[in-house]
Length: 392
Image (cartoon, rainbow, N blue to C red; front, side):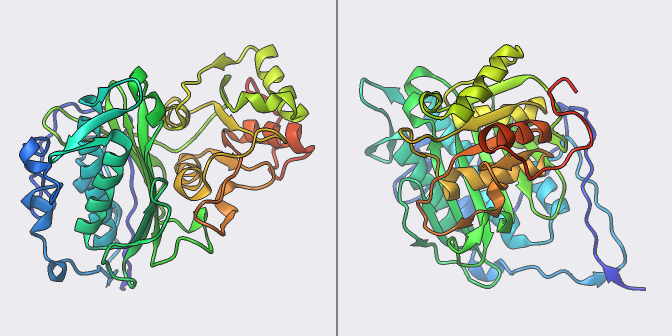
């Protein structure tokens, strides 16, 4: 009897440092991707991505066949993982191309020259601030993917036609270098992006995303992603030879006393937020706050516990953008087994009206989000059958 193909991912919590890697064909990148000759203004990726014709990239369709279960293993390469995780070749292409951009941005951030006003690096013969360089690299990656219809970024908050199809294509919104103001201090920074089907980035919600990811540029470079149709949020490590290796998956965010409080100036005239911060201090939570949203949210996924907050007040307005930052990170947190909130609802349920919409947000475990909503608004939409508390 024919059944719809079923693809399920499993992951063992074991790190395999040595795995045999298969060279990609169309999507493979040359070992010298970081060489200056591969970073000319006319081309980001050299021949490896430019030579793939649109006609050779067909939108995949699920066919009726016998039941199939594919294992996504710790130790898989990025391409191996994606091939097992989805039959959508267009989505695989987009995620691979963005992975190439993340890899290149990591190198450019590491080699940026930082002065008193900005951190710059060269793109061809042109000197660019690293956030604008990252922006340019990501737009070029999406062009070469051939499956991106529209893209926009926090730096260029207008729809840019990338030439991809509407049917079977995607629209991508990204923050090219979140935390660019702390690059000069050598703190961890990152790239955030969300992928929506079709040609719309307004009138949609974060829950409509088919994928989201962040690149994290710290002591290690990692690419953390989640896909709509498979469980978990998955971390890939950039190895010395330039390949991405699957090293961790997260499917549950538990309780633990760790907090990352953003926009603390709002405690001055937001009594609920002031009460919440005092609770964290009184209950002896561990403060883990870097000033960068990407590392602060990523640590919840990696440590599988904690809470991140960025709250508004009458004098401290919302700065975080729903489309470019909040919705993609909310997708990653909720796929990892955590929860998100703007105070009354999941940030994934907020309709994106304008490209520049902004919001307050909390990410964390279920009980932490209950506490956040109750202390700021008196009640929580989430139900629990056990006492609320990090130590419960």
